[in-house]
Image 1: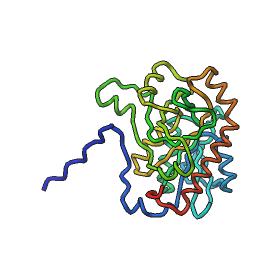
Image 2: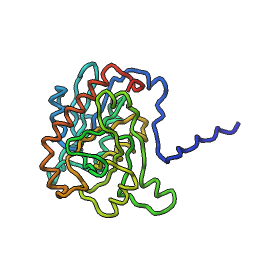
Image 3: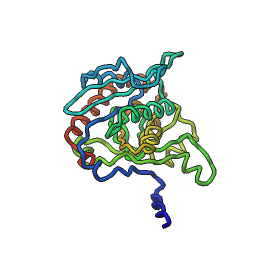
Image 4: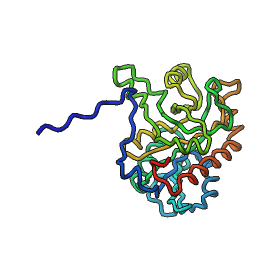
Length: 269
């Protein structure tokens, strides 16, 4: 007997998770929060009263840091890629994000991933400093491969897991997220971001989405706006100016998300 044909691709060329019905209705037990910067991570470590893992589950020599503990009947893990061994700065960007996401899923087998962090926002799309968004879709804006089909692979459009009840209850904004490895925005990046119809931009989200889709773990994205990309101030200046205050807003939002998740299944979100 011939094998059944593969399912037809989604018309919008995005890729969604295919968690089984049982997974959708089983109470969420273990969550992993992927977060790029120590400044973003530490308020949540305090909020959830987590402990740093002194015997890390990750390969020897990697700078990746895990904080863990129990919070409202959830096994909560915050994974931070750590500091660059040579330069001493946070290991931001898509390469670190994808590696640490893969390692965390393999080691911890979470029911849900949350990629939390700061992002740039577009005032033309209604974003303001301090706004918190849940990303409905994520895509890359700096992987330009102008060859048929490879172009779609480069964009890598993927959906976050569906959380309509959570978004309504917590009154978060919803918008599309675009990811690239540069803090600034070139004209080519801007054109791609506009094509992605993005409201916010970051340096990790689409990489986390790629790995979560590969290993079939649902993921949601919680992003707080530190800078207005299409505003008058230089991005780097505005980012540093607002980072501390916006990190507080991010910590509050992620705590609300985890509080809401406690005792619920994916289908409840």
